[in-house]
Length: 409
Length: 229
Ligand SMILES: Nc1ncnc2c1ncn2[C@@H]1O[C@H](COP(=O)(O)OP(=O)(O)OP(=O)(O)O)[C@@H](O)[C@H]1O
Ligand SMILES: [Mg+2]
Image (cartoon, rainbow over all chains, first blue to last red; front, side, top):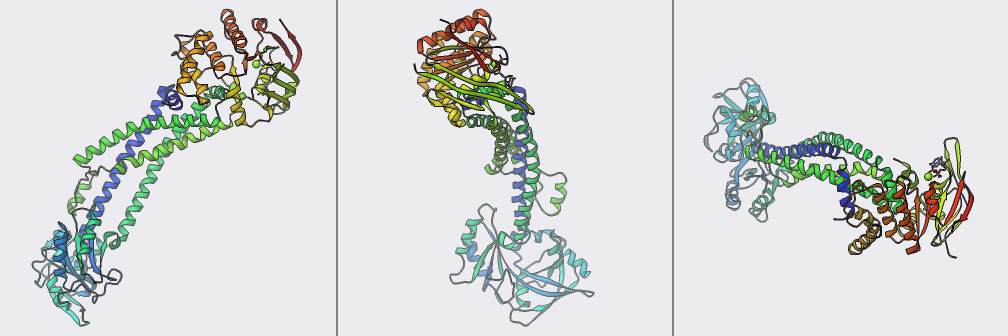
């Protein structure tokens, strides 16, 4: 072991109690960061997955330009055949064809502009939670049934109940008038106010009839087993597209850019909290090191007299800080990781989350992910901050004049 | 004879707020190689100040100092550090040693700074500790050694780098007369055996008796300079 490492290690044990207190503070901060960062990042994966499974799916095949300007004329021809072709290529992923148009929805009393979605009745429940969130009545029965389900806010606005009739008036693919009157068979509550206020779902066959779509659709929604292998899935789906087609495969970040932003915001605001914890710890380290440097002034004077460069003594102080940090981090990471492993196995649930989760078909417990990044990110930041905190006392040694230092007691 | 230390018109003033202290004024001094000099004088006469200037631990406010042919007063901090490391040895009054290092490690520390390899360090440390009569105590820390033993480790450490000049500031002040005597004999032995120059500041008669040359300071000036043997 090099002399500096050894000297530094022995120096931190000159005041065992001080060392234990300071490294406990570091350990405490490290354990909290390991747990909090892991929890935060695990929640994001859950949150993204849950949000996407409501409606958007992990991926969508769309005609080029459809995302920005969803025109009814811009379609996927023979969409069901394409979907079955892709299904064969993409393993265990679920696919469902949708078609979409805009219409004026009217009850006896009122009218609202709505988004009308044609869905494959047997496939939609694999890519969206809405079929399972029908609160009143039932989901659509078959692809050619003349019936609709609507969001609960829309139902409230239109003063419509299950069994009553809904009139839809829009424009078909060929520019003709698309009009139909269908009974509402179900009312859903998706948890997204936008969807609950403006979404009407029809069976795909019925939609294609009313909106003169033939066998065309607008999107094929794809949901994989998890978000982890999304890129592979995206490649597989892309390989199933007809060669010269103008279709594109969009991932959730393109479909729902707000979600990514919301997560980044939350991540940053989380770090504001962590930063204050780290700052408090770093002040305790700074204090420890200012004290330990001050009380060793004479000793440093002797080292200088022997011919040691101030820089070398500065390095010694930094190495002491690293030892102290490693000591605390080792304990903190072990405790933090043990906690994470516990909640990885038994699951963590926020107080009060069960009820909310049950309401929206959401998993109530989060099984923390064992991610190396989550486990090391916080401790790495603490290590950096510790070194930074020791930097000031270390640099002050440069100001030390050997003759004055020798006079100190 | 070749001079090891040459001071010309050396002066040092300290200024603290409005008070100006003339610690040294117009010191002219030549110390030839291999000399064994005792600096004496009452408290505050400037002994420590002179040693510090010669050792490059402090900068003079006037005059010139040459040590081993090099102008110490013109050196940068880094050059001074190298100078001390390669050419000088220091022994102070007490608490000379790095408390967390053993006797052997304290001695090796200097050689480590010099970049000497481990094997040679070990061999030299063992030899010098034997020379100062500390065999068997190499692995003790300073707190486990008596005051006299600690000072002998300090002498061993000062000698081990092969300096041409050793500066000692009241090395015996914390020792009883028997231990003081032993330490001085040790330094004499190093002086005679290895031809190393010693300058020792003290106000103890014991040390003065051992010196070859006795210089008396008063109010920052040399008032007498005589050969004793
Ligand atoms: N850092 C300083 N600031 C101001 N004055 C100082 C400083 N160091 C020394 N002096 C003054 O310089 C003069 C010489 O001091 P020095 O320490 O050299 O004396 P000394 O001969 O070693 O005394 P002693 O025998 O007590 O050790 C004294 O008057 C002292 O007060
Ligand atoms: Mg003195």
